[in-house]
Image (cartoon, rainbow, N blue to C red):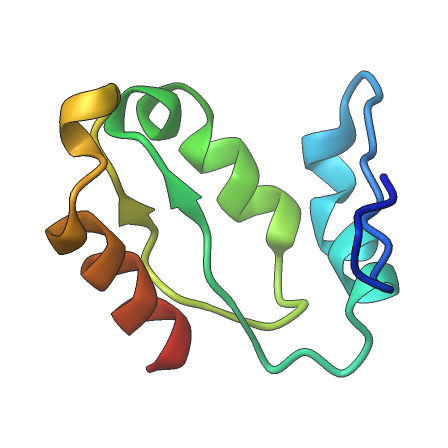
Length: 88
């Protein structure tokens, strides 16, 4: 994905990708010392274990930052919660 900035984002879509998530992150972010996953409680309940397993020991994985679904969750408090996790 190309955006207006000079940065390029890779989007990977493949069956079973979560099993190799750690490898994909290591290739995309070499030298990363920690990973922060932002998810909704609903998505995390369905895929959290696979995400955690797939990340393996690639980097120090923090507990997930869970953000509720829907427009009501898009608040300054939610933004602050995500921000704090990213800069911790």
